[in-house]
Image (tube, rainbow over all chains, first blue to last red; front, top):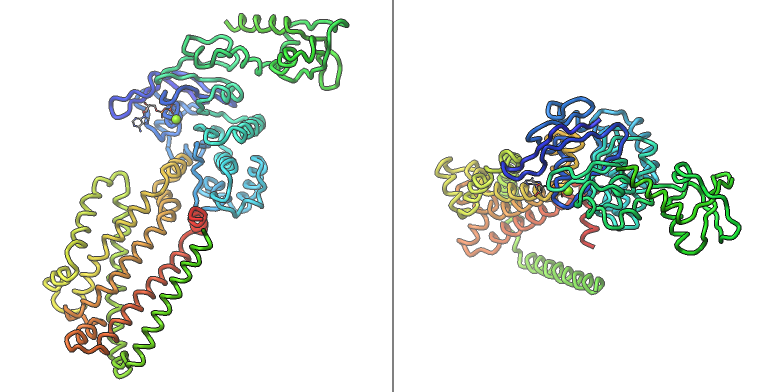
Length: 323
Length: 249
Ligand SMILES: Nc1ncnc2c1ncn2[C@@H]1O[C@H](COP(=O)(O)OP(=O)(O)O)[C@@H](O)[C@H]1O
Ligand SMILES: [Mg+2]
């Protein structure tokens, strides 16, 4: 869907912000661009909708060069969300959210229906907020409207620049989870900027880790954590990277890869649902709540048990496999 | 704290209105407005001239200064700001009397000289407030608008101007209120206006002439001030008004 072909960006003739960038974002993928401040994430994002020009190379959006597309028309087909939400204080929430449909000339009825659908989707009551103004909403609510506004004309592609970066941690976690649910349903192609490894691990299908305008590694979160491409990646993802990766696997993943142990009568036991993460499992085992966990599926059927050594075996296998 | 502030504001207001009432009682009992009562036709003619000078010069200034302010804030033409502000500044730094004299030099005696002089005099505050208003619009907001595919003119009309409106109206208000006072000088270039009575009063040491000219000019200025407060209320989008209120409280 989005192809970066040898993209280079030079500001003011000397600041090289992006250097020979090559990677693809496939249909329906959520790719997070991650890296320290100033590494070029925002620049790369803004070249896609041509808010920044491309110095060299090109970006293909659905097979079309963004350089040669009609900017206005193209931008109306790309959702855009920024950290400071950028809502317009002179317009009420409905007019804010429906600005692109309005530009596209939708009729009233269609806009109203769309507004109602979107507000439900982002968890706000449409009738309660329709006539309110941005400053009357909390930061979290404003950013929800920001997301609704970007989704308004149902664009296939979304660009999001640290959309949850300005929110306090609890609200941020909420919005991340809600947004993942929305993405599960809508399957947009999303390019998302973040500087938070935990956010990236939690949300991304793939992570693009940048440093000084260059790609350090482009991989699935589990792979990046278990098999960092170089010492910069290893340091950036953190020394607890293996523990972080545990939240990416479910008990079911382990049960599929390895044979579960028979339930032992002599060990202290507890039940665990197979859809929970290995992180929960290991925490329970370390907690000494139990020495073995009896795995059950949603119907409560017992499928065998896991212990700490089985988890260790699984991790070694994963780390080797992703070589 | 809030309460004491409100009480103080109320007391100041009461004192102000009290003094004003006392002044009018004094003025009426000493028949200070006798000139108006004796020559109503002349009064309305002078008032009409005064208002015409102010409104025509003000309207012309708005028609030129607002577009100029918009022009200067377009990124492409930003470099022209110093030139335009410089020229407008010149019109403002030169004393109003000199501007009037210059205008008379070109246009001769009469109302057009006064209108042109006040027009020149009004440009700067309106241009400056237009620029300040547009500059105060949050860059992220413009960025979001661009990113969603608004054209430059849509950004101007839907985002920049509505958000700059409070400041623009404030500029026009300042210019007009000043002009109502300055228009009293129009008499000097033979353009009439209430200045005729004021200057007659000064020359003849006649308080009745002086007051009959000066008090209506003052009331006119207050009236225009209120009119623009109302205009601001009527024209500025509700969301912005509420946002400002919320910020101040
Ligand atoms: N408009 C600009 N003009 C000049 N340099 C810029 C501009 N925008 C960004 N840069 C520079 O480009 C580099 C990358 O910036 P940016 O893409 O904003 O990084 P990030 O979003 O990863 O923090 C930085 O060195 C920054 O100073
Ligand atoms: Mg950035």
